[in-house]
Image (cartoon, rainbow, N blue to C red; front, top):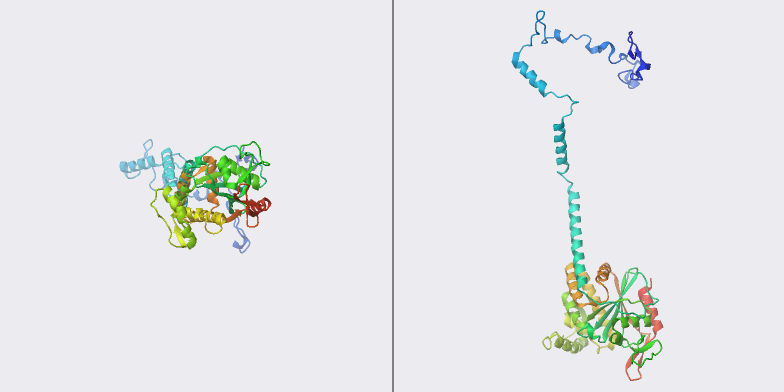
Length: 447
């Protein structure tokens, strides 16, 4: 039999180690006992003889003062003093007593509810502010994307036409080339001669935007095109001035012509007529340009034509002198079209690149509202072979490249052309194509 035997000895083997702990307290540090003698602690295990040492001298409850006492033999024990009143108190106290081990479902439910209420009652102010800011940023981002998508849908989209030249050696995943075609016709359907042909190259590796003007009088090959309809090509095609390619074959023939003659990849284009250009400049509040007195006087001729086409009063927007002047859309267009002041078409292409650079810088520094005004006005004025989704992704590329360095290039360069005439007496520019290709590769693709 396990437990204590008749001699009060501990049967440790049968108890399975329950009484292995021995003493009541640990002995502590030796420094606590100067004589090196540890006090003897009681060795009696719990439950020995049914008595703990501190209870040995205590009397039974019946013998203590105020306890129950028996009356005569067979009689009911008498209540303590206090009678019924005391009995009610005791009864009330007994009914309100709850064992600490008894589960109170109602109290537990109440405590759980109060914890839930407390857990959501307060939040850290910094964390709350971050959440609010994050929500606002997400909402603004979604609104901006919706507006941008809407504007991209305003651009007139045309299907990509058939191309015959798509094997240019100059291309890179870091460079996006978009041909900007500008014409003085009132409608893109007229296919008039293009007075402005600027290749806009966005290089994400060098962080540069390169604007390359192709001069309109360059004598170039129109690939796979029978110019006179006689069924015979001069070499790979017939030759003509650069600005005639759009007249004969639209944007596709113009891109083929650039790709064939200068060996550079061109897949996308944006067309704008000059009179839509007026609205774009006005939408951003004009641009500031340094103008000479000679240029101010020369601008009157193109402005006279523009005023007539746009039903403006005769003499509107004329400049009386040069200087650093703020030009409206009508004046900026006349400045970009000015050809007979300075070195003819050489300076005109320079003015066109200058005007585009001024527009980009003005939009970049004007803030979000100016960007929206510019985007909305420009979108309604453009025509492109890019889809709405392609324009949307391009818009992001343009936004991230707003701080890129702007580089200006002209083809042909000063040392890469010569004056010549055709068999019928037209003045043309002969081109050194090898030098022109080398210049394009260095300016656009050189890392």
